[in-house]
Amino acid sequence: MDTITLGQVTVTRVREYFGSVDMTPGTFFPESPEEVWKPWLTPHFLDASTNMVNSAIQTWLLRSEGKTILVDTGVGNHKERPYAPVWSRLETDFLANLARAGVAPEDVDIVINTHLHIDHVGWNTYLDGRNWVPTFPNATYVMPKDDFDFWNPENGHQPRLGRGNQNVFEDSVAPVHKAGQTLLWEKGHQIDADLRLDAAPGHTPGSSMLTLTSGSDRAVFVGDMLHSPMQIVEPDCNSCFCEDPAGARATRREVLGWAADNGALVIPAHPDGHGAVEVAREGDTFAVKGWAPFDPYTERS
Ligand SMILES: [Zn+2]
Image (cartoon, rainbow, N blue to C red; front, side, top):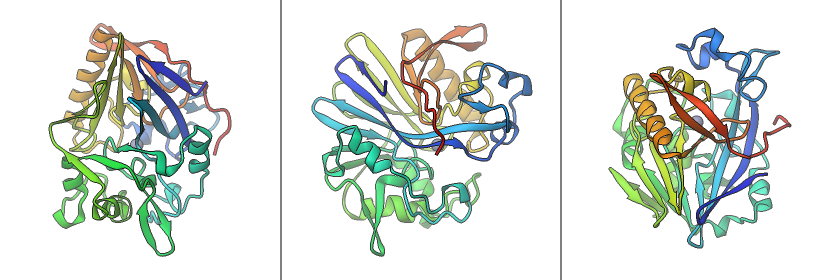
């Protein structure tokens, strides 16, 4: 299964990449205790044979109130990523996967970038001859203004990520802004009656979450607030990509607590396995209560 229905909204998982991103648990999550990883996180979230974390790069395709909405747009093809070789000059079949889900680029009404990291904005654009142009010509690209300002090289911020986002603003954000297709929001933004964006800072200054409230169903798309289900049981363990470690921990605890108390499905950007998770409070931390019915990926990219 790659589609679930929540209230009036359908949610489809569209794959770009699945496999190792060449990081051990100790590199990816430096604060995580070694014993938390085995055995429950294998095989979907950790390859025990290589001790490498598995990641999925995927877009969440939503159909809501007659609109076609994409949440995060992966890495993209042909991008020059000198400081992130695993994402450099990819040639994936993402657009074919999107077509298999029934969506052509011109059908997309809204693109939501939860934040503006390298692996969340890539398919915002594609290379047309020598130029990066919007992949989705009829879409409004909804972006958090705090991230737009933070990652804009003209503002001269020095990210903790170093040069990991090199070229990303220039080839994946600026072209859609120049085309007049961006909507930069602050504090919060209502997409429609069932979908709302709110700030969830920490992983990046403008990191956001999309809350789905439809009928009796609840879900929250959390981007990279949660990189691995490991962080449900160890909510204070950040990824090495979190710009504000204290803020990321506080946001993770707050959002997981809200999801536990409201029976909301937590839908992160990257996990493989069943793609989304129900959580419960357990003492001072959280536990996995159940998984969504998405089929795990079986083949690596
Ligand atoms: Zn990410």
